[in-house]
Image 1 (cartoon, rainbow over the protein chains, first blue to last red):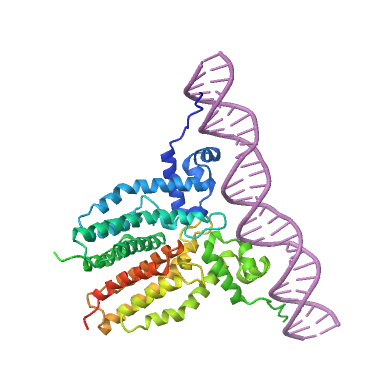
Image 2: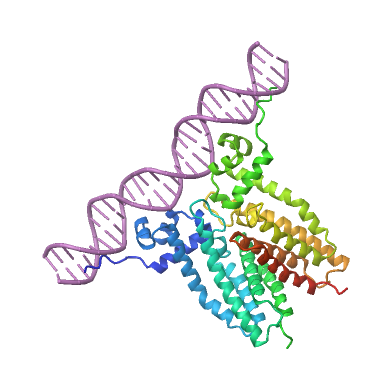
Length: 200
Length: 200
DNA sequence: CCATATCTGTAGCGAACACTACATTTATGG
DNA sequence: CCATAAATGTAGTGTTCGCTACAGATATGG
């Protein structure tokens, strides 16, 4: 069997560039011309590798979550629920205002409402946001078992709350909120967990 | 001076329909064809009345905030900072899951990141979100003067926090979160204000 | 009743969109 | 060294986008 001509570009490096275009302009605002230029390839290479624009988005989202996995593991490994919340929100504040990437969060501004024909893009983003929320909820269930979170605490509600605050910070960051503003929000938000924690 | 042929459609009623299209599909996802059909007019009437697509969005945003003004006044008239927060977040949870309008918040999903040529749409939305945050901040300054909010409380940070939570709830609502889920977030969020309030 | 001014509907403008046909190039398997 | 298979670059495809020219309709001012 012949194997065909090998790909000349690095798919991961190209995805990093595509990710940034989607991040900055949203799914519908990003054009194939912008994407191919940033990726350093021509349209046929893009379509051969990723199928279509939506396939490219999914691949970029996979890479986005993969890159954040290590950080997220560090968040979940914090000793207490309160520390999980603090690491989560402070890390979110910092990454959403990191000059090395576009402001905000790809999973938020990538496309909350889309036009006819792209209806599942918002669902795609929502599904990936939900994964983080699930991880947090399970972590808080564990925190209750371990006793650092009150038995009366609602793990699902707390996880949803953290998810909402992160998304809200993403909205603010996307329109220019600076790091200090987001850290203020994080600091206020964490107080909820101090009230829900057992005294030490 | 001649006055010309009078307009045959009701501008406010047409704006209500345009608002809903922008709300459901976002600025870039909404097409002129969808807008004109929903508004019951033809493109020349739209352009004569609102200039262009962005002008129509601004007019729709004006109407959106005008319609919410009465509700917002009720929020700010709550007796204490804690009650302001509760009314704000509970009302947000309800309106963002009201079956009479699209899920979520127009000022959030209308367009956080846009393509080349629509760069000021996100700023337009952000400016209007900032107005609400300003109102909240001033209300919390008043609450400190009136004594129901601790003197150590940071009015600006609390306003930003409420703004972030509302936006985050909008993100969740846009992807199908139900009313109960948003109310859970609201309930958790309000706890911050109980800690920042003076004992009674 | 006419001149002027504005709205309305039809019809279509140029540009940009996502996407692809096709010939060429570059690898592998035998 | 040839047949096969896949990626590439050029140069488009048809469609949809926001927007508008134009002619006819409908009001007012004098």
